[in-house]
Amino acid sequence: MKTIGLLGGMSWESTLLYYRLVNEGVKARLGGLHSAKVRLASVDFHEIEQCQRTGNWDEAARLLAREAAQLEAAGAEALLICANTMHKVAPQVAAALTIPLLHVAEITGAAVHRAGCRRPILLGTRFTMAEPFYRERLVAGNELDVRLPAADEQAGLHRIIYEELCLGRIEPASRDYYRGVIARLVAEGADSVIFGCTEIGLLLSAADSPVPVFDTTVLHAAAAVDWALGATPA
Image (tube, rainbow, N blue to C red; front, side, top):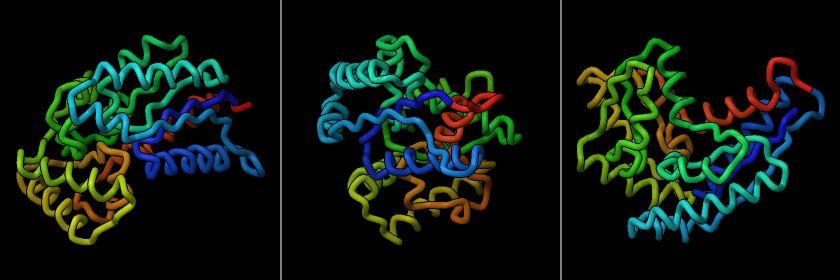
């Protein structure tokens, strides 16, 4: 079994899910008392959010690259950035490593394609929805026509993530808001929905969508388990 590196804390609420999912995945595959071999770094999200807010992505990249290098030095054999938005600095983080970085958008795009869906809704922070860094990796080679919420909807979704979900608050009204955005875009032809923020799965499930759901946290963790165990788990 190889060792998974988790670069988390963005937010710690969703990093908990990563840790649980990779351990559940290994136990399901190997049984008994098996659990995942993990190296975990959890950053202070306040520092990262300040970089996001001020547009200081170079500093965010420096902070995450430093943590990633320390994870590799501690024995991680591949790295997951446990946040969709912070894949904006994935190239800089990968450049600090000699181990693979498992990119959440590439993993998700491939899963959507395999399922036969072609017009997914992308939900996430305003950075993930509005900027090209994520969508470009999502659609590359996957023939996807990504559908985005309207600008005002993006602002509402973003606010819920930062002011509620990252603080562990689950509000029924916010669930209804997300459902409404999904329903509107499905009525306009979307055939699936991507939970493109690691916290969205805290609020919504597949039951909240009339079309197939692709939860990036679940997909990313499952890919890490596949990588760690390989074709012949050891």
